[in-house]
Length: 180
Image 1 (cartoon, rainbow, N blue to C red):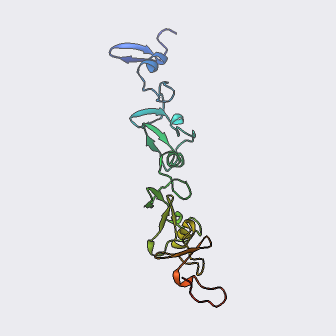
Image 2 (cartoon, rainbow, N blue to C red; image 1 turned 60 degrees about the vertical axis):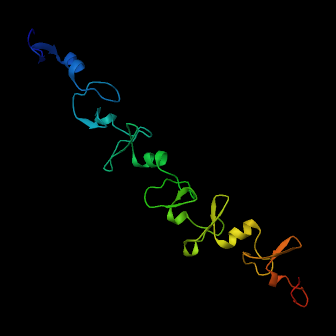
């Protein structure tokens, strides 16, 4: 039996197989065990193939690869959930094109009037308490819709009966003559 076991030589010295691998094989960044077979080299580290997985969910990486943050690997879904900016409308991660407004980012489909959910005419919107509104709903929120025509009041107005009116819409309920 003497001399029949495999050995490894390094710098002129013999080593049994387990000790050679323990001393000189690359180490897995996850388990710190010696790597004896296939390995993954990523993020300037070496890993057993079964130990290279998402740092958040533990899923092994497929065809889409991985994303790195602070030296740790993440699957696409977890990376965007954890680190991508969030949409001001739906709070989901923004992964591609976006609108930047009101000190935040929005999916294009989410940047709509907060009340009626309609896109803004001509790209113009109104800011009320940090949220986007169309002109009508902005004035409704601010209490500046005419009680007569229900359109926004942007100039002079008459306040009566706890309501606001365009001057030409503050009229007698019977004869419809303009009141001053």
